[in-house]
Structures are given as structure tokens and as C-alpha cells.
Length: 283
Image 1 (cartoon, helix red, strand yellow):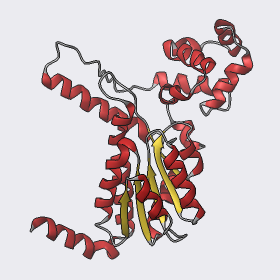
Image 2: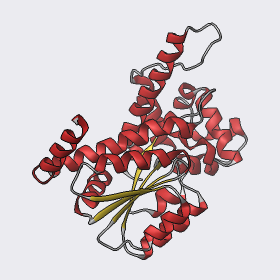
Image 3: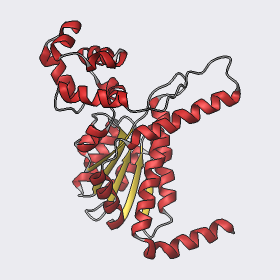
């Protein structure tokens, strides 16, 4: 995943990928998360001895989360510890007022957006915008809790001169994929990025040569590995919200970012369309 991996804070990276880890990897992850400062002052041999695993197992873990080795991970942790972070505590208490609960939810959403910014890759964003801008038609496909995001994206891009559509039903998704060509772009939105129907659809889309963009969680998933351009979200599970629910805030924001980028680059072409849309809303 290149540069965006190196800029993404180590602890957030571990937390986001935790569900994908093996039993041994989780053992190492728990060790780091419980006391990152201790690891900064440890050697790979000391960590391996503490966990009763081989040095190579620790080294492979460092590679797994995107670092070149143990030393690179230590440097990232040290830099992260030195950088002031916004403290967000969404632990809802029985004694919290309604406003206190609302503030904690908002703060958690803000932190989720901040964490996702670290995953941004300039080339991926540029390629995604160019795929959309140059496409004959742009089709949005939403899966599970991300279905509503596809519908929102369709509504936004109706305010451009692009042909656009959104599909959330698996049968209709496959029917629409059969009509795509190499001149089209497909945007697949899925939190986990591993749904079987989605992967079947992705294969059908790519068979017809359409450009593919995936919006999915920051973790190794079939969707992120198979699309032409992956765009990542970062979200964590809390007591009252699954990670897939909180990821929708980020997915919507990524769609907003793509839309505004396209509008900036095609301002002259889309000025009339946008004006008509504004007039329609005021009627």
C-alpha cells in the first residue's frame, strides 16, 4: 500500500487490522497496544522472548502492518508518542446527560475522519477522480450497510453531466455490470470488502474492462486487492456502534471529496447542470 501505509499511525493501523490477524499476530498486537512505550525501548529479541515466539514471527508482524522491519515500526511508534493527539473517549456512562452522549458521538466521528485522512494516497485519489471524470457512465454499487452510501453518491453525481446510476440489489447489480464497457467506471462500496456477491460482481465488471474503484476499510481484503484503485476508511467498533456503522460517515465523506474534485476539474462543463439543480431545489 506504499506511502499511505508509512504515514498512517502505527497504533491505529494495528487496531484497524486487528480482526484480520492470526492468533499469534493478535498476541503481538495486544503486547504493543498495552504498552507501546515499552516496545520503543525494546529489541526484537526481548519482544520475542516476552511473548515466547520466534524473532521471525515478530518481524513478519511488522511487515504485515506495512513496515520494512522492527526498527521502522519502533521509529513510527516513537514519533506517534511524541505527537499530540486528540483524546476521544466514547465510553458512554449511565450518568451521562443527553448532551454528553451526543458530544462523545460527535468527537468519535471527528476522530474517525482524522484517522482516515492518514490513509489518503495522492496517486489513488488522482486516479479515482480521473476515472470518474473521463467515464462515459459512473455506476455506484453498495453492499450491506454501505448501500445507502451508493444512493447518496448517485444523488450527488446527478449534479454533473455524467451518466450515473446506483444499485444495491445483487440481481440488478449483475444485470447492470453486463452492460458496462471499458469507457465506464464502477465504484464498489463495502466496509468489509469480502462479500461473495460483491466479488462475483467485481469479476463481471472487470471482465468487461470497466475501471474499478473500491471504498473499503483499511485492512487487507479481496476488494482492496482486486480493484484498480482502493480508497480506505478507518473506523473502530464501540459499545453501541459496529465499525461498519461508523465507517459510513467516512464513506460519505470520501464520496463528497470525489464529487468536489470532479466538479473543480470540470467547472465549466458542469456549471449549467449545477445551476439547473439549484433552481430545481428552490421550486
